[in-house]
Image 1 (cartoon, rainbow, N blue to C red):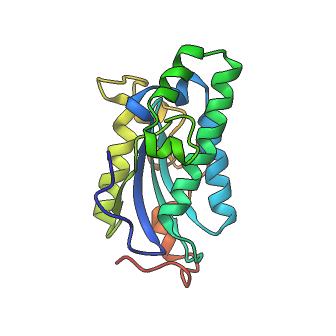
Image 2 (image 1 turned 90 degrees about the vertical axis):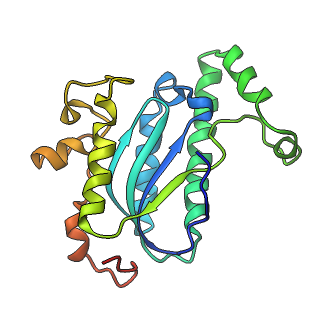
Length: 198
């Protein structure tokens, strides 16, 4: 799902999606949900706010309010994918997944290989939408929270039952595995460093 255009802002609230190469279930295979949480922790340390997420076996959806950090948001997300990807490769090596590692290695295109890339872990880019207005944010949260219950995945009976998601918090008020900030609280947070979206 190549992004059609670069995020032209240095801050703001965005719905983002990034996907494992060829939709392979690399996150599930290597039990790398914790790596996404570590990336979220890093983002929080940098002053960004996680307002929602779902981590699927082969892709990640998240709503994130990026504060002004002087860094390009595309680069922030790219670095996150790189950090997660390195550790996924390490875990594949530990699991002795030689056939899969060879497949991921052969999938690297020549120009990337010349730059030193060894494995193709992710689809080329990521998808994003700016979160403008509560109705849009709620639509995106509902979309991603329902993802695990979709017929294709069928990972949980209800969205609140799926562990790697903020659906439990938005449905019951009780935080799940990873605590998020309710998007409605963004108005109460010091947003002097975050571009207003309303």
